[in-house]
Length: 216
Ligand SMILES: Cc1cc2nc3c(=O)[nH]c(=O)nc-3n(C[C@H](O)[C@H](O)[C@H](O)COP(=O)(O)OP(=O)(O)OC[C@H]3O[C@@H](n4cnc5c(N)ncnc54)[C@H](O)[C@@H]3O)c2cc1C
Image 1 (tube, protein in one colour):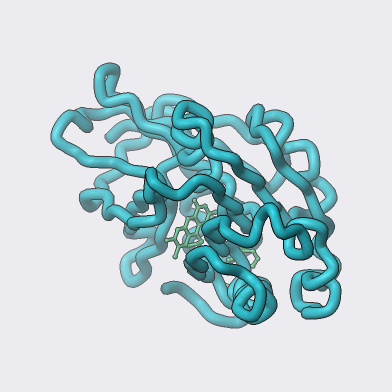
Image 2 (cartoon, protein in one colour):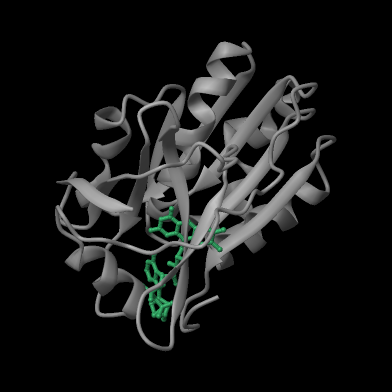
């Protein structure tokens, strides 16, 4: 596929559009691609949007520093040809569930964008909880997300007491919701621990990266 458009939504968030023939490719919410980002490394990125009719596919990537995936994505420019493995599905969505809460960080923005049209179209109740660096607090608005709350990355989501006190966790209204926890694996682990005693819905936890761990 060919890189057809790149937008820096901030210094550390880049939206990349590719064009190609995606007609035979099945892409659902949260589907991801393993990209070969160097001779020895592969890294996983979520498809934020796909238009099979016009052959377009998009990613939203977090440029977090000097690491193979981050550098590869930062270096992609218009006209670059990228070979990809077929996308793989992740079974996050169940149409019979009424309420959804999706938690994550910059690495989860693509996931949230892939969910938004379906959650809206099928009239689910939903909340997006996003922990973001200050410089990215405006991104959910830029992406025209709805029903979101933005939190600073100040360690709150590694504090069980703080998470327990969140209105969403306290509210009986959201106890039946399905929780999809993504992004920083430490935050995911703590959030899950708090929910386990309280939530009656399904909890899907999928840490996307772990501090100090390279790659998958
Ligand atoms: C199913 C799935 C879907 C994903 N979708 C996306 C996506 O759509 N967009 C996206 O940007 N990422 C996504 N990720 C996360 C991405 O694959 C990881 O962040 C990956 O580690 C990046 O590779 P790297 O080579 O840049 O860093 P690595 O070499 O893996 O890591 C180097 C160092 O940086 C740290 N690190 C890694 N990622 C981050 C980060 N985001 N912020 C701060 N520190 C970090 C590591 O802990 C390590 O210490 C997804 C992961 C999974 C499993």
